[in-house]
Image 1 (cartoon, rainbow, N blue to C red):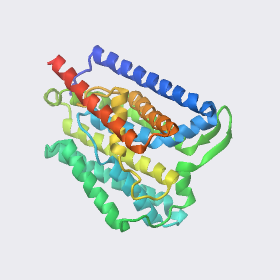
Image 2: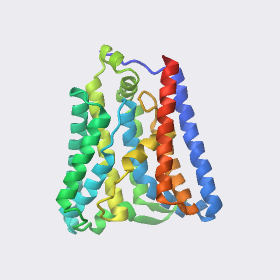
Image 3: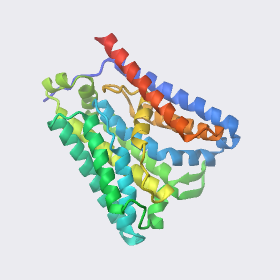
Length: 327
């Protein structure tokens, strides 16, 4: 029987503090939105906000698995784009094969995740280099397959996953299908880290992979599973994006960096060993609330990208400072 290094009480306290900070940031940003647009207090508009934020939240939860084990996944956006283009080409307007194609899409995502995980775990290539190469490979394949332009068609039963809204729901008024998918995915992601031994292993591997290996923990398998979960989250987000926005060759552009920034806002440590699903969720909601607020203020897209850059640079600086203090 193998023993996995346990997280310390201070790290558990830090995770709770990060969660509270992410929640407080989301509340503050959403309150600022309400000041400019009071209708956002209505349940219907809040549900619509969650519907539009769902892909980013799902991506952040998947990215967190990789970050906890000490890596990055830069291929998430490319996988989401591939999902949208592949779905439109393979289904091509035929609703009878929608669910079979969705199964194929998840198979493609799992294959990409396995490739990333195997290269990182056994060839010892840094995850940032591995997934950067995968991003370029998947983007190239997607564009070559589609001819560099959106083609095919997504039937209504596929698009309903992203845009269908159930009405006259007691207490809520409206309930988008995307919000149901979001809640289901976040719940499963939370259970994977908190209801199984895998979560403790992931934290231990991210904190000190050598010590985990000496303790008998399956370091390689832990990292491979993290990349598979990340790829599955990218497929799920891609399906919602296709349903919400339709077919586009830029469907997933930049989403990988947004997912990393969301985890950072939530308090995840970029070099691994600290973070929680709830902090990633609130971090993603905070980031999307920030984007919504910037749109209401009429600020350009470039300003939003600049803020993401500042967040990532600050996170790396804080992580390095904490590491120096510990050592």
